[in-house]
Image (tube, rainbow, N blue to C red; front, side, top):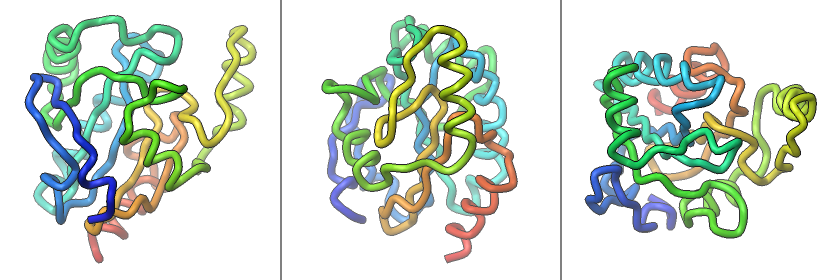
Length: 181
């Protein structure tokens, strides 16, 4: 795996992890939030995980409170919310920033490796402006539920805008292409 593999990560339960521990798997890395209009994507992410986990897909969820304070809970509250409401069984990590000066090192590396996203990012930015918000610009993460696809070799091979649903043809096709390699 590439140098992102060695970046220290903390699981939502406080245990240490790195992407190297997920070596040989296709990774879908998603920043999440419990109080967002996109929160129902947890359901699609869990379905995607269940469908492809035995074929080598791992979904990694990174709760963040960066956008509209839509992830206000503690790590324990987030865990309970995800399990009770969506049956989330894929790994979740400790809440941390995914944008701005204080963003966690993994997200700094992901956005540097893939500065532009696929999907309806401009339309999403316009919606945010309509709600009186000032959206980020690339390479920053735009909003909750942005998705990064990492190959089995640890290369960032895709980035999808928040509005790209987990079961969308473009995301599923990209995942299947990586799993087939």
